[in-house]
Image (tube, rainbow, N blue to C red; front, side, top):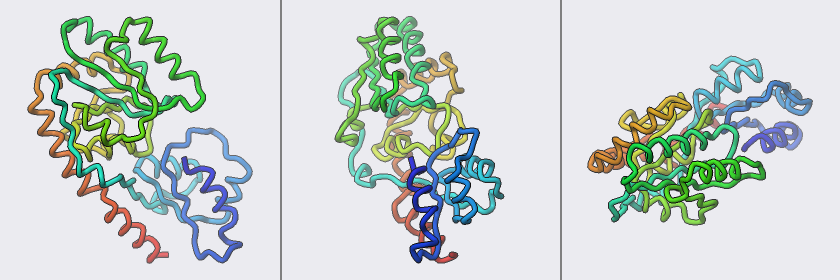
Length: 270
């Protein structure tokens, strides 16, 4: 996250000759209290940048400032991903979820939904790939134990970290993100950049990142997720169509050039 960088630079910027300092936050801070050093930074009056509307609202509430004083500048992505294309040559449906095993990520709903899907369609050729690290918590091991208990190891692979994300994503058919909270997900931008259609939880941050052509389900709603997976399995042509639209969408709305221009505009205003 950006918390430590914001605190460190927020404390020293007035003393090193800097003309301004940007509190640039990329996530939702759900802590109920504000520590001593963060209070000091607030008093030094930084300029605020958030990477989503929800993140802006979170900062405004936490630091007790008006939302109009916080600029929204969305994340950008590795534009090299635009030069590769998702293309699964097999008949099975490959679904990937790129998400570290943090509290806000909801791997459990996905795993339980897979069990429901397989119960309905035991002959279906579908495979799920969980890409991400545990970050020292027990959540990955709990997810693996749940998958084992539900007898799903023929349908799920826990991949861990992937060095070449672009190459891995090109072998997939659908990008999935089951999450309860976000700043603005880099995984969603990467899915779109390689031309994957997306299934995501219906939260404002995911709606902000994705075009309306993509598919959404309520947090924890396993039946909705199963229905979307069925839809994806049955209509591969639609998946390719959405994927192509996503490539155009992410390039138009989250490009490096657009990000740089917004930052330069903010520096000029300061």
